Image (cartoon, rainbow, N blue to C red):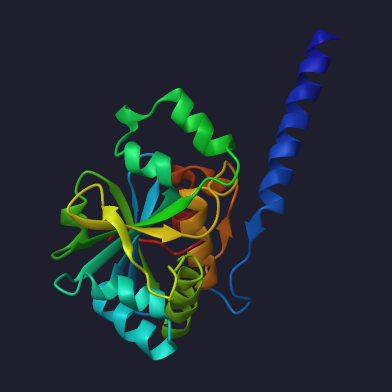
Length: 232
């Protein structure tokens, strides 16, 4: 009897997990994965993921598409070849540069607090991205022009311009040449930094699972399995 109850509980748990993944799955383009040569990389910092994009391409397409916020952000890093972007809870992001700095009260406030303000963290750098992030896991995706533009439009919607429409930095970022910018949206358990990256990539045409993207390692695994991601 006890064994039967245990097996029933296991089956119910597996069914619930399968349903969760099914309900949070965002399918990609009906015609298949976007195939292109525009380099986009995702870097896993251990508990949150960042998106690495070619700065010149971001600036040029933002200008052509009239995406003022993205264009202003990219213009502040004109001396660099690449941008790394991450989104998250302001208090959590600005006070937890690495997992060792994480505290239980701060994590609980970020995950379950109401209307937590969010920020965009942007890093400018040059050289090969795998060398710059040599201590982190990284994958490469190749987007086509349409997918890249859709991704930038989604990114523009993440920015919160100040009065007058400009996007002003909030302060220095966590490492390298970096800045924080005010962003839209509230950080929570089902809308975290990894979900932000996943939704940008879904806008570009890739299939993503929001359940998998709850963790950065889950996002990376999903990109390798279904997104066509390869070594950078």
